[in-house]
Length: 300
Image: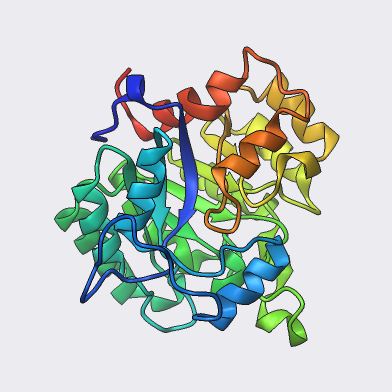
């Protein structure tokens, strides 16, 4: 169960990346992130998102950042490419539990790991009860969400009442690099997640990001499947397509979630641009906090 106090929070950001390990020397929580150029991949991502936040944050630094803003967030690393994620899932889960007033940990397991990945996920869930979901990035992990290679992982997610978070649509990962860094955009079509929602009824699912160029597909899946939600991370709201704003204001107002893709987009930037797109005042509390709280199981 989450340790969040909803009365003290103005928002819950459901999409925050942790790019740096706090080991062996975590440093003070308010320490500045890694200097510009410390990670070439992050620098390229920052250029794509037109942000100065080129350094990664550790879990304690993310906690300090969001606590200062009276916000909570979901944090995770990404496991892909056959290399152990940095930071490790265990570190994210352990440190997030130490900052349970503002952090909710998800973990990430590449389906290509096969049975060893399934066992790793079972161990993570058993040893870190604060974990509330699993992050998938089909583009980086090179799989269609409805590929049966991932189904044993979904079985664990469903068994433990966790949330499956899928990157959908375009991605800044590899954007502008030769061959797109090997990322194949086809894996990001949200319609492949529709099969997952059929085969695992009752499992909570988040389609991450406005799903360009498949926005209508994402809206259709979320409308049709009761346990599918959409997070609005990875894009400034001023770039949201009109149909996404329309449905966020109406039929999907209980299924859209505030998310930034921090550190590439900050909460300040996202919230400032939200006021420019005509989201109804009565919808904002749902979008910013209430929908996420219900999905994460935070008591009112």
